[in-house]
Each structure stands twice: as structure tokens, then as C-alpha cells.
Amino acid sequence: MSSPRSGRWPLPPEGAPPPDRRSRIRGVRLMVASLALASAGGVWGVTVTLNGSMGERAALLVIDGQARTLSVGSRVQGVKLLSVGAGRAEVEVEGKRVSLSIGAPVSLGGASAPAGGGEITLAAGSGGHFFAAGSINGRPVRFVVDTGATSVALGQADAERIGLDWKGAPVAVGHTANGAVPMRVVSLNSVRIGDVEIPNVQAVVVPGEMPFVLLGNSFLGRFQLRQENDILRLQRR
Image 1 (spheres, rainbow, N blue to C red):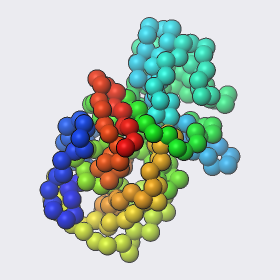
Image 2: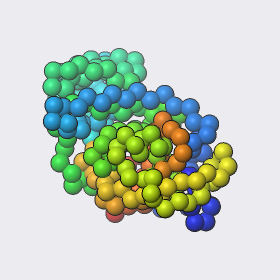
Image 3: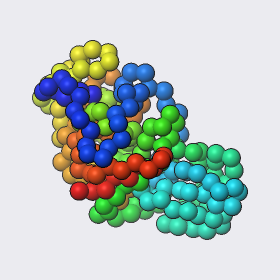
């Protein structure tokens, strides 16, 4: 999503991985497994991603943005590893058994970690994209990192679902692979991934539906980005 003002793609933040054009609106092919299990009080639970395994004895999980190595039978942050196989793992949270596949973030029931964290750790998923389950204004959404996008960008369907008042927002024209499109410029009260919450984030609402929310530089610019193989770390500035 290009800048409404200049119509050009911005440079990514210092230390960020190079922009991946496949992550933009057109031509994206994603295989995203997402599961939202809200607790009775409507609490957005912990987010778990399977990043790798060590045979059938242990797995590398990213739990609420933190990389953890669990052996079968062990428990960390309320997540118990039950079994590990080729490209998959099974975990238990609050008595619920859930299957994980490599690189697909899953939101599980349970209390969220308190906000106030300073680092987000993301594992690469399908096609090398970095996905994250998180929230906007306290409502759950699915993100994909896009260092080539000026702002956080979401479709009208997501904007309606999370209760954004976007219809009367200022209009700007953005340039995408599909040509010029009108967008509504809004301010998000909060964007959260794991225990990291950023207030007052600029975003644009684009026509139609999108399968995910683009996590652009209005959010990423608050972090120092560092990629190590298939792990992307966002350290709050």
C-alpha cells in the first residue's frame, strides 16, 4: 500500500528485511491456519506458532512473541506440548487439544499476558511471510508483515467487524498493483501482538475484503527489526 501523500513506496525501517512484493494485495498466495478460541469473558488468549522440531522429542514454539523450546510433556506459559511430528505438533491449553502446523499462528484460549512487553518474535510461515495473530482496539485480527506498506492496512470487512468508525474518515488515494484506489485514513487506539501494545497507530481502510491486515510501517517504525534465518525479531525502540 503506497503512501497517500507521495504515491511512492517508503524505505523500510533500518534493519528491516527487504520488502516482499508477494505480500501485497495482489498475487498473494497464503496458507494460513488460524483458530480463535475466546474465553467466557472475551479475553484474547495466547498466540502460539510452531517454528520447528527436534525429532519427536521437542519443538520450538513462539508463544506470545517469545521463542520457547519445549520437550514433550513440558509446559510453558500455560501451553503443554503433547506430541511432535513432521511439520506439526499438538499442544494443550486449559484442557483443549489443538494441532499446530509450521509457521501458522494460532490463538488459544487462556488469559493474555499483560501488556508492556518490548519484543515480538515471529516465525516465517508459508512462502517466507511473517504472520501474527493479534488485536486492533482489543478485537482479534490476523496480520502479515509488509515492510513496503506505509501504514497498517485493512479491508472494509475487518474494519466493520472490529467496530472502526471509518466511513466519515478523510479520503486519500493509494496506488496498488490494481491501480489507484480510494482509502479512508483512520487512527487505531491500539495494535497488539503478544504482550506488546502500541497506541495511536495510523491505518488505512481499503475497499473490499482482505484475508489479513497488512502490518505496515506506521507500526513497524516503532521497532528495530532484525531477521535471523526464519525468525523476525521486533525490538521496541
